[in-house]
Image (cartoon, rainbow, N blue to C red; front, top):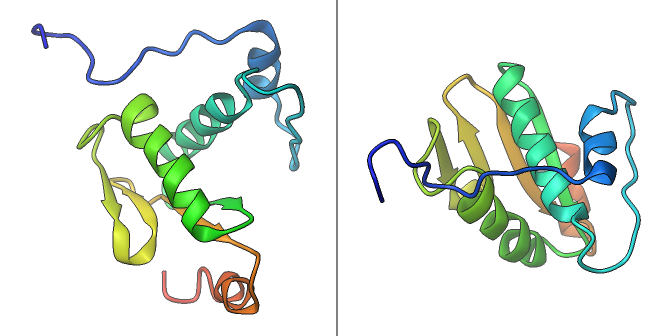
Length: 126
């Protein structure tokens, strides 16, 4: 890697992604066809939120926690944050990214009762 070169892929949003990134609604639903960039836009948005707002807790949820870790963690690590980048640490035991500013992105699933129960206690031990 050349000096000054970023260790992650620079993100240049498409028009549809830009609308999602600029949206300030409390709930945002991304829809569209496969390969349309929904996952990348969502990953960029939650990373930006975690960087901007110290102490924020962001939940990134898929049907199964293992799927969240496989897809979301991989995208965040390789394309958005970069491995070991930006003061962000992956805590595999807790399935979370921890930011130097106290923010967290927690990866979770909702398929089984035990996974749903785990969501109820998020924030208790923060």
